[in-house]
Image (cartoon, rainbow, N blue to C red; front, side, top):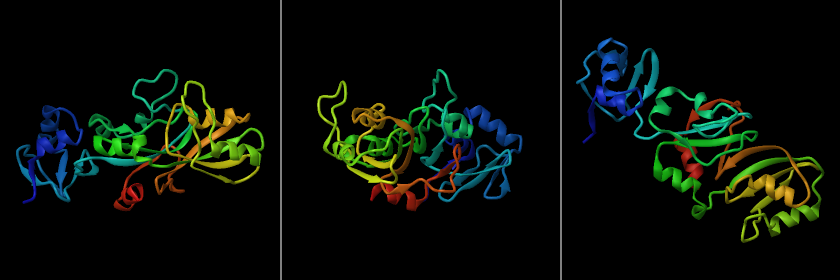
Length: 237
C-alpha cells in the first residue's frame, strides 16, 4: 500500500519550515498538489510521484535528496565559513533546512564535481575509504610532469603525518603540465601534497569524476541538479 501523509507534514519533511509555518503556507493558498490548489493542511496524499508547488516553485516529494553540484572556486564546503561564502548558499533554502550535506570536501580554490545528500547511508558509502569509490582529478601543474614523477606518484609518495606511502590508482597524461589523477582516498589536501612531494606544484585542481559519474559539460560552476537513476547507477558501478 502506498504511504500517505498529510500536507502539513509533507512540507515539513521537505524542509519548508516548522509545522506551524507549513500550515500557514497551506492556509494562505500558497501550495498546490499535483496541479490543484490545496488549502487544507490535514488533507492526505500518496507520496509516490507526488508533485507540488510552494509559492509558485515546483517540487517533487523525495524521501531523501541526492544531487550533484559543479563547485566554483572561492566557496567553502562547510556551513561555518571564515573567509569565503559557503556552497550551501547556492542551494534552495528547503534543501539546506532538511539537512543536506556535501559528501567529502573540496578546497576553497578547488572546483568540480561534488555530491550532496541527506541520506546518511549513501554519504557513508561514497565517502568511506573502505568502499574505494575512485575520484578523478584534473591536475594542472606549474612545471612539466616527467615520466619519472608520474611513476613516483603511481608507486607511492610519503606525506608528512602519514604512516604509509600513498599512491595514485591511475594517472593519464593530458599535456606536459596537465594530468588526470585517480585516487581512492580523500585525505586533507591530498592531491596538492602528493604533487608537492614530487617537486612540483598544483596551479589548478578540478574533480571531474566520482565512481563512473562524470561532471556534465553543461553543468556550469555554481549550478546543481538532482541525481538521476542513471547517475546513481554510475556511482554504484
